[in-house]
Length: 303
Image (cartoon, helix red, strand yellow):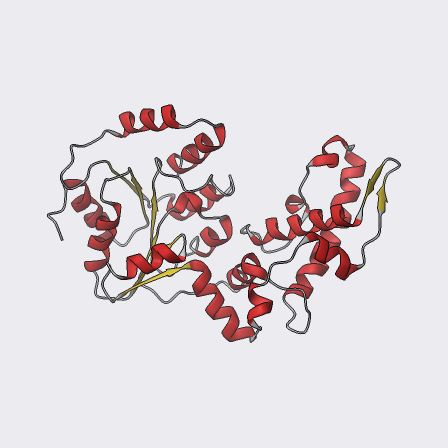
């Protein structure tokens, strides 16, 4: 491993404290090397959690054997499959609106005097409600998970309240069927991840390196919000793979760091001159064409 930079050595010292740590890394600033440095400083077993399988596979060739390089979904999949004995189809198959409308035998339904929703439109709302719940850190499905879009945007308060009540009741019924191994409604990837998170799992690691934290949804951050292991959140403000999946996600990270957090920047690579956070931020803003990306960066910077 090359000679560590002063920023990497500072990250190592903070890591040795055992407290939660947030690292914001710019492109080419040695993020992966830094995480390898942190992992190699511990003999106990730890985990590097990647955003997708290809990154996890690549990382497994770089990190020591004591570091388990996985995706959070793979950990959840194995735990739920073992505990519930669901079939692979129950675990992995997607659930589409047309399919749900047919299974539930949905018919047109009217809310108030003017709003009428067809079967597929109802299925869209119900699936979005379930998905929003699954991607949240909430323990129960409620009004906050019901989407408001399309024709619902022009509906009055009383009509919206009626739609929410209908959606919550039916979405809860769908979720109950999704987690029943005897029912044909599949869980899907969001579903088994949520089911795993609801069990408040203990990962069995001394430390967890959560890469691309800005792309992590609240259900995963919620698992690490009450950590049994030291958690290191790592994000790259210049190379966001996707927009921040949920604007409440950064609050979950802040809860895990508040009062005892360390927050560091990686601004230079092994052989490169340092780039100040201020300059790098201006470069990023100049290259970004939309407000969604800006919201992502702001969310990460507020952690």
